[in-house]
Length: 334
Ligand code: NDP
Ligand code: MG
Image (cartoon, rainbow, N blue to C red; front, side, top):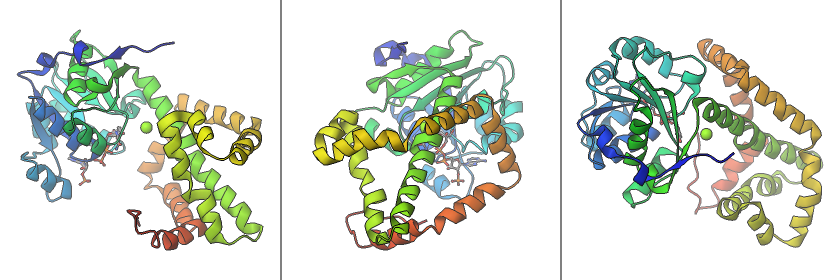
């Protein structure tokens, strides 16, 4: 099933002319949306918490940050670029009663709408522009004349113009230069959660740890195991990024390629595929969302315990030491 694609030619910035855009939160996404939209000729207001680093940054960028409620009162299009787990609280306290019919609420990720944590009043359009990259890339690409591909979705179209509003927003941040793919809040939310749980964060982390532990238990030096199981992953991911699986296989040795083709399916096997289906089921039924929401409201006991356990994992201890030897890495310690 092919998706609809939109470009600058399909978007009319006039849909946002004379309207005020309120950007809530000046973080990774917020700072990029606010600046790109302003430079695309739109009137932008920013909300930030006083005395924070991002408040100062917004001031340096010549915005005058206000409280969330003030921005919501004054804006026609309100962009929810606050952390996902904070959005429902801020929504309840400062947004809902200021959200009059005729306004539009915009999201960059669908979680809170799809799982019913935010329920906007009737008469309000609910849309999404989800850039497929971090805010800093969104900003640097825009400045350089390019753009990052985005997803667009419409959840509520009271005005009959919700898609046009969303495309103007997407085009204003540079997304229309690269392409804007049409989707739904449901599909964006479910595939995003699945990707980060099964591949990007959960799957890869566990694969690295299991392989490292296997080698260390067999008596190999942890330093070597760190290089083989974690460090070199970047080289492989860069090849995927540039040319997919085929280009990675073209580039690595024939020995590596034969090992990949014959051993890979034994590591990720029928058992793993069954578990992936279970994980998807938990996402689709809302079981994961409920667990995460309850976890947050209980002050994150499981989250914190598991995070601490891995923070002290041997591969992390060895990795911190070895990264300090590689001066070209912009190494980070949290
Ligand atoms: P960040 O944590 O980078 O930014 C959130 C900002 O909101 C911070 O500056 C924070 O301030 C500020 N903030 C928090 N509470 C309040 C408040 N009550 N009033 C005003 N400002 C407040 O978030 P992201 O940009 O990463 O995420 C925003 C949205 O974008 C999420 O829905 C996320 O899923 C989505 N998204 C993120 C992507 C990414 O790459 N980061 C990619 C695509 C979508 P402080 O730092 O001082 O707490
Ligand atoms: Mg994602």
